[in-house]
Image: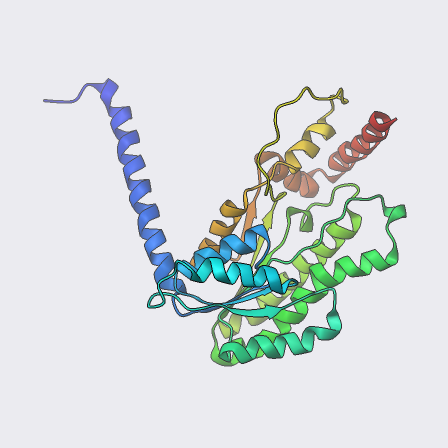
Length: 311
């Protein structure tokens, strides 16, 4: 007996949902298999995203090298990973103090990282320093500090682990960047500049090391929303402009757990470029290439509106 036509669509939806669920379960199982025994370096393991990544890779059986600027926070993360872990299935992480603002220490840091296991399979560069300020009020010292943390640090560390990756013809370098490495918005000049520089460096690196079977990935995400949503309040009156709408969309962030899962999937599937953003930032990215004058006008109007709102 034929099914009524009204039942076909609901059944297709149920079947599609089942297939999607099975696919996710298979991919999660494969993720654990793919990272097992891999040496994974996380440059800022004590951040929200870094901690989420550490838990995911640790459960998958990776040999973790956790880096950060605070020894106490690293030890706390170490305890949280090892307390409930099965030593037969996981490896105790190794800890390394890493501060990209101290570039003079980078040679020693690279040596310490390489001494842990003799090689690095996956390097995740997720360290970052943010700044929101007008161009004229940002000092040169602060500009340089941001460039050290967001650009010179990751690129120097990548250069340090690259020779062994090339000699082994195996390795994966992941830059957790920002959508502002592809789209600059007002009052983020130093931050956006450092992210643009990092994007360009790792894009060049990707092409140069492809022949050695070394994979380079960049993940461009919007604002990381590490806190719980704030209570609903009556918004203050603001200019109702397109620029205000775009600015609001650009600050609609991603949760650390979501970004961490995307990093793991990028490593497993060897994706070369990922943009993790809402539709409006996507549209803005395309406007930057297709109609740059229109986008510049919108952003410029947004700056004028923000000044008027403050006044």
